[in-house]
Amino acid sequence: MHARGELSAPERTFVPASERAAVVFQARAFLAIYAATVVWSLLSRSPLPCMFIFLPYSLGAWHFVLTGVFQHASLEQDVLDHRLNTRTCYVNAISGFIYWNMQYHVEHHMFPMVPYYNLPELHAVLQAGGQMPEPYASMWSVYREMIPALIKQTTDPDYCTKRPLPPPLPEARVAELRKDAGAPDADGWVAACDFGDVAPGDMLRFEVGNRSYNVYHAEDDGLWYATAGKCTHGAAYLADGLVVEKTLVECPKHNGCFDFKTGLPKRLPVKTRLATYATKVEAGVVHVQVAPRRKGGRELAYE
Image (cartoon, rainbow, N blue to C red; front, side, top):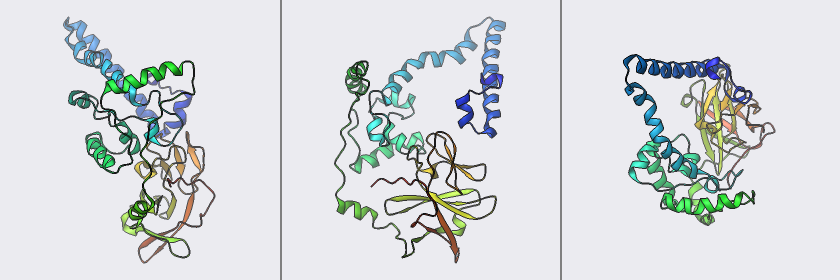
């Protein structure tokens, strides 16, 4: 379909118009490589070209299925807490290499912009924090739990595997972790960044207490804007995404877009408006009025 220059109706809702030509080009490039490989094998009367191109995937597909299936199967659905809908499982070094460390799947979903080679380090940091579920010791332990659950789901679609979570941190510890967070003044204004910290067309995330915010330096008018920091669809940090088409912020998780000037959703799957906030620049410092909100919208925060 893509090689013919066509996109499906759902694809047209989330593939930006500026990227559609690249999708078509990539599909045609792969098709040309596959066709050239077959022709090369026929002309050379040798299976080696086809073996080099097609055999690695054919031989490795079973491993992708083996490790990929247990990422989410039988777990809860439609929950924002990735600890409940995703698994981390220890695997052998060879499988971890082939799988690009994606066995640390809870960590990958919580922080999707962390590169695969840093996932083991991220896993160690999060485990030390005491708020992560116990990782599965092996693939065998996952399948031993998952297969009976999947069988039960054939007769009870609402059934799911419940992951036990550690108890919440004591309030004193939470307060200690938040003590370095900046506090707004009596009118709700807080310093977000220095003027030179954010280039035109870029954005920056900042925290106030337990809430996350984004500040944007617009490329088209040079003004500053601010929104809530988490996507209203999947609670991903928007600052881990991209500013596209000058006034849109793209979520890194599902590629939905908001207009950061108005907070309005502009590309599915996001549907709920993002909270926006007033900004001002004083003495080279960008301030955001985090309370009250400038316009109606939704703001997500984990209490």
